[in-house]
Image (cartoon, rainbow, N blue to C red; front, top):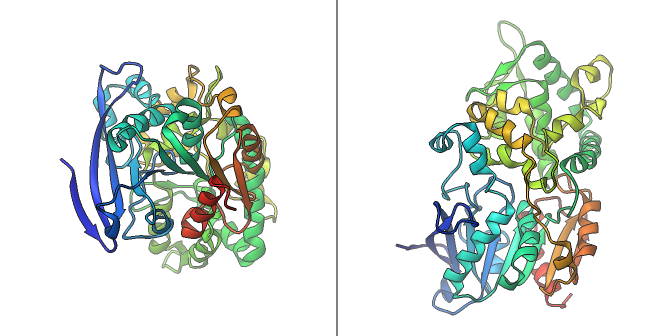
Length: 433
């Protein structure tokens, strides 16, 4: 039963859908999806076209907006919006350390999670669309990983799309995970250099924290074991528009005096806990590298292996000299599952996914080359999370796709730029810009 309620300027309706766990076996086991329908209060009774929002990730439920925040304000001027929690996220049959043991052991859990990639998400969307729109095509807005899913949508079921808008989420169509990370580590280095150029005082602050953590591992309030490598992964902040400033404020008061000498403050450790823990989005860690799996090669902890090709990221070697500590982001490592209590019970499951070789293709280059769906994509210059060169190559491979390449925003541009970003991209799908 759907439940509707109000927030300022909007009417919200909770929607739930039943879909097959394995779309190749539609009569088999099912899972539940949750989505929130949003419509402007003054348009609630109107017959409006639909816009589906696919959140970034993988592993994050759809953003919980209050009222008409960010891009949603622009969308509600002409659409009824569906904010979908993709399978395994949010309220959609969540997959985490508490629920996955219901599947059985690590092998059964890994088999289950192998069905949580973009192809399954798109097939979920098609079942939801037929129920929600009565079969009419809808417009999709895909942010980051949601953009990856949108390119899969264009490959598998373009008939379901009236238009597609992608923000920071044009994937390589054929890159292995190793190619993705070989392109990523130099970007991480550039982002760290730009941060230290803005806040030169943070060079010494970051080095001091890393030196402290090399001498003694610190346990965070929630049980996360913080070491120097984990501290370096705070570089993920540098992919957002305000991330450099957030990192600076985090580092500036890291230490407090104690009877035993300087120690990392409780306030610093509490904030670090929220940034590093995967408790709220464990699927990100579990299936992150599998979003690049398409051939017969395993991902095999790609980010960890490729990192070894960039010795400048080694904290101990850096601290033996006088250079700045490099920071990382958008990477998952075997030690991630050792340090985070939300992930420790799933380490073997993650290892089995990393060894898997039977990944099916996510994109259809021939179908994309013949695309007829209006598509527009925002590509952010030197995006930390999605390689710009990969995105541009894919843009050229999708017939009719129009790009907006900008350095005005970082990866979170659709949130930071709000209505302006969505308005521009919708105009591009209509040849109005």
